[in-house]
Structure formats: C-alpha cells, structure tokens
Image 1 (cartoon, helix red, strand yellow):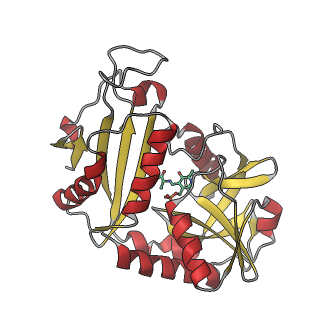
Image 2 (cartoon, protein in one colour):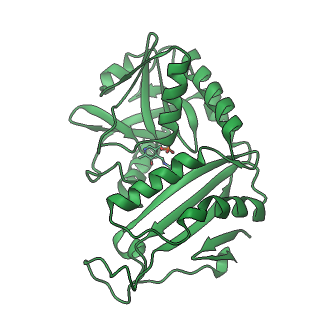
Length: 286
Ligand code: PDD
C-alpha cells in the first residue's frame, strides 16, 4: 500500500481523506503537476514548481504554506514508497468551505487542499512504445480557453483518450480552427527536413515543461525550431512526428488519422531527441 501526502500528513492511501465540499471535487477548482522520477530522482522539478506557482496565481488561488517545501515532500514520498521509476502526482485545490457556493471562499478561513501520491512505473524510460511509435487520430478541441493553466478539468482530454481507444489507436491530437493544439496530455510536434515544428505558446496549449527542455536541447544540437501552428495534412506529410510530456518524454508518432508519417516507423530525429532529453535530464535530476 502506498504512503500518500494529504495536508501535512503522510498516511496510508486508504486513510487519506478530503471533504465532500472540496472545491476540486465540486468545481474542478484545482491545479496539478506530474513530475517523473528516474533512478529515484526527480526530473525537472524546478520547471514543474514554477508552472505550479503560475497556475495558482492565474486562478487567484492562495499559496499553501507547504509550497516552499514541496521538493522535500516529493523526495520524502519517493523515499517512503521506494520509487525507482515512476511519477509523482500533486494536486492543490482552493480547499473545502463548509458549503457549495460559486463564489470563492474567504482565503482567511478556507485553506488550500494539498494532495500528493506516487505512481510506480518500472522501466518508464524504456517503454516499448518508444521503439514502435504511437498512432493518433484528430479530434475537435472542445476544452475551455485557458489551457495554459494546468487545472484538473480533464473530462474532455479523458473523452479524447476514449475516442482514440475506440478508433484502435493510442491518443488524439486536438484541432482548433484547422490547426493542431496538442495531444490529450502532451505537446505535439512534426519534423520536416531539419526543422522541428510545434505550436507557439499561448492560452490554447499547456506550456509543457518537457517541451521547453526539448526545444532548448534541439537548438543546442543545431536543429532548427519553428514555433507555429500546423495542420493535420502537414503532419501526414511530415518526415517525422512526436509528442512530449513528463510521462512519455519524447515519443514518436507514426500514424495520424490512418496515414503513415514518413516511413511509418520512429525516425532518427525523434530518437535522437529522446536520447538527448533523457541523458541531459538525468544529469540534472534532483
Ligand atoms: N500532462 N499538454 C497537456 C494538455 C498536458 O496535460 C500535458 C502533461 C502536457 C505536457 O506537459 P509536461 O511536459 O509539462 O508534462 C501538454 C501530464 C503528464 C498528465 O496530465 O498526466
């Protein structure tokens, strides 16, 4: 049984409790982060901590007292649960007032709820999918307009995953006004020649922590990066495609809406980026 963290306490998972009035439960009034663990160390913790603070600020959510100590809490959970490879899930909600109300509760009397738990993923960095590549379908992006805030409103992405599953593929790329925004839980890229193309930052996509690192490494390796929108037709005509996220790192995409991308197998650029990303992030892990 896992040991989890809830509001200052480390408890067995079946003893951890949150109120039925919690705003995360009633209103999806919560933000989250997922940080990967490789060899017992946290990958890009500083990036996740920074984005978490931004998400809180964008929603006027009070900062929980534990905020400055989150690295210690992450490390303690890794230690208590003997995590070698896996993920740490963190969620902060606006807390639990004593009734349901659309108006935000008074931050003086309602303090944020903070929950963290670990997910064991043995061999996370050696996933067989990385060698085979994944297949995606396109779906219309029906999420709310502030996708740059990492909220727990994951119903549409979850429906997207189910649409992918029903279509016999691995994931869905969401499309808005003819352009790809991102995957259900990852950022989307195509490669044409020596150029990596991925959507520019804005409110329409999550500002991926893996995205920032991969683009930095790509530039250092003299690859060209274009941050702009692209279409599904362009993806189908690309040499390679891939996704990035804290749980998949760099994952090749080999088929889009039934059309093979490039040779229909993982290509050399995505493979190289995956290798660089894993090597460099392991070196900087804490
Ligand atoms: N998802 N876009 C969306 C919509 C996401 O949900 C995620 C992450 C990303 C990639 O961000 P990062 O590189 O910081 O992980 C992009 C996490 C992994 C999840 O929901 O499980």
